[in-house]
Amino acid sequence: MSAAKQGSKHSEETKAKMSVAKKGCARPEEAGVSKVSLKVYDSLNNETTIFPSIREAARAIGVSHSTILNAFSSKGYPETIFVKKKRYQITRIT
Image 1 (tube, helix red, strand yellow):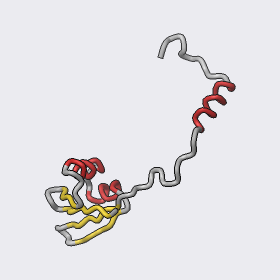
Image 2 (cartoon, one colour):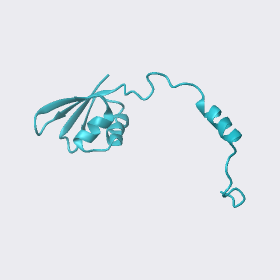
Image 3 (spheres, rainbow, N blue to C red):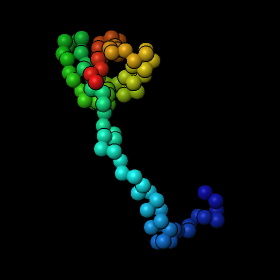
Image 4 (cartoon, rainbow, N blue to C red):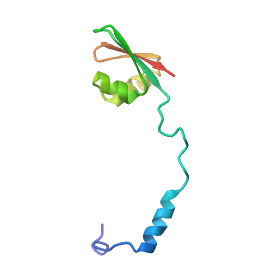
C-alpha cells in the first residue's frame, strides 16, 4: 500500500457503490454441494461407512481431503482407491 493512501477512508458514496458492485448474480442452488459420496471400508475393523463428502471421509480416517482427491485424479479416476497403507478402501458413489 502506498504511503499516500494510508489512513484515508472510503466515503459513504464509494462504500455504497462497492456494495452494489459486489452483489452481482445470485449463487445457483447447487453451488457448494458435494456431488460425490464415498464408501469407506476399514479393513482393520471390518467396517463400512458411507460419507456424503470427501472432506468428511478425510476427517474420519485422518488424512487431508487433498490426499483423497489426488489419489483419485492421479490414477485416472478409478472407482476404488486405497489410502493409509491400504487400510482404507475408498469407493466413489455418484
